[in-house]
Amino acid sequence: MNNAPYIRPMPASWWLRQGRYVRYMIREATCLFVGLHALVLLVGVYRLSQGREAFEAFLEALWSPAGQLISAAILIMAVIHSVTWFNLTPKAMPLWIGEKQAPGWIIVAAHYGGWFVVSVIVLLLAGGLS
Amino acid sequence: MARSHKPVVWGLFAAGGTASAFLVPVLAITLGFAVPLGLLSPTDLSFDRVYSIVSHPLGRLVLFGYMTVCFWHAAHRTRTTAHDVGLHNDRVTMIVCYGAAGLSTVLAALFLLSL
Image (cartoon, rainbow over all chains, first blue to last red; front, side, top):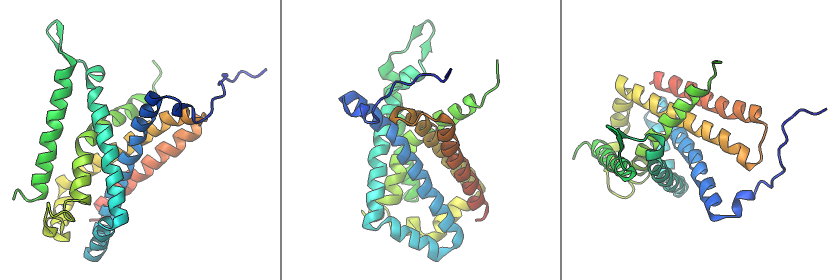
């Protein structure tokens, strides 16, 4: 007798049938671009460790048309990740004030505000506060 | 309760999801577009400046932590989504995903320490 759990056969493309399934799959796929972003950083650190010429070649590749295409894909998927992640925060970490639950939009708005502030700070630091 | 690796990986997944939600867009702009667009000057991302920031002990620590949680976020989400696209052998998926994240984490540490 086979005791393995039964898995109903499903075509791998089942999620293409409905808009909300597609949106779910795009949301999940953002993680591949978060990973790709970290890999770009990893390569950057490696090239940095190899010295000036290697690092400058890395930047040149990053700013080539192909590099910018990769950065654009990372940026677009990262924004989708940020929006979907922050929109779920009231469910992931509900905030209780005394006996009352804080309205979800306040938690979401706080995250968007924080996102904006962090982004400005990073850009200012990158520019040497100039 | 039986001990499992689940809370650790889930913690890394959540930390990575939050850190990347705040930082990936601005870092993608800073590294990928800011200089070509003229938003930053090339000297802002010069070898000397980037090296001094990244090789600072705090820079190494922050970058290592950030890269690590990004890798594990990607690995864990890929593993759970693999099931949805018909890859039902979770053992294989787990080894591939967490293996890649583990290898990347080790490489990040090695590269950062070699600066």
